[in-house]
Image 1 (cartoon, one colour):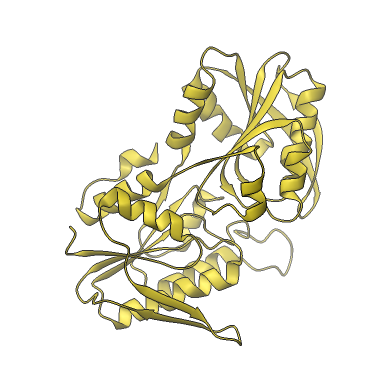
Image 2 (cartoon, rainbow, N blue to C red; image 1 turned 60 degrees about the vertical axis):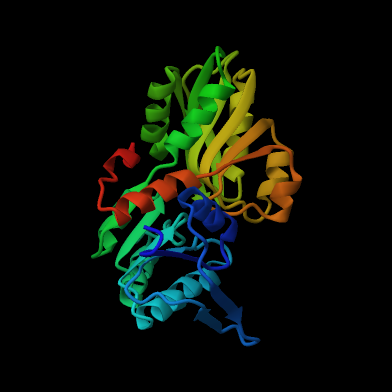
Length: 314
């Protein structure tokens, strides 16, 4: 395996890439990623990849366009260097929220990004918790959409032993996800009826379910500006929750997110490292980071050795 596989990383999440390499006992590939003064991306692959199976670890998080271009340019470089296969490991798939025409004369950018990745020369995509599962259908190449649920569930089971908890979905769309967690934790479920009044603007309306004197755990796929999260926490507190925690796979944490979390009633926010934590996030004591490195490393190993990866989807 060591002789036939190469793993490279862009600038978006080199720490996660190194953890994945450590799990597989493979050195991280040598690649020089530069940005010229005019903003152009330049990449040089520093080792032989001819006939190798190559995996590129790159989250398309902020700065989204730079990281996306790094992925595309690195893919082109590897293709022209005669790599046998190129798998894009995209822990966080940017533009995933633009997966349909939500209004007249708007783009479906998630599909455009899929076309760009495929055209660049990627043979397979591995990602984690797509915002909309149907994005897999935007690709004409295999896509493995892994779930961070086992990583988060393992932490919750150890963290809340013997406590009376309730899983909370911050909106109707996340009810299925919260129900799956509640079933595995053997706890009850609550749903917050949220009405969005504009992009990144949400208003909590009603709470469905009993949270009084319970530990409420808000579950979402991502936390962006944390507006939905903190308003949900406020509603839970008003309805008698004894303490409030939050879990999400992707910590986008843009704009005033960190400040809102610090000023909220939430005791702890559990995130995974699909997106690296910025300086402000590292400075707060309210954020707990879990790693998906072992999950992604196992997926890479199984793909390389032509084994089934279906057991990683649950």
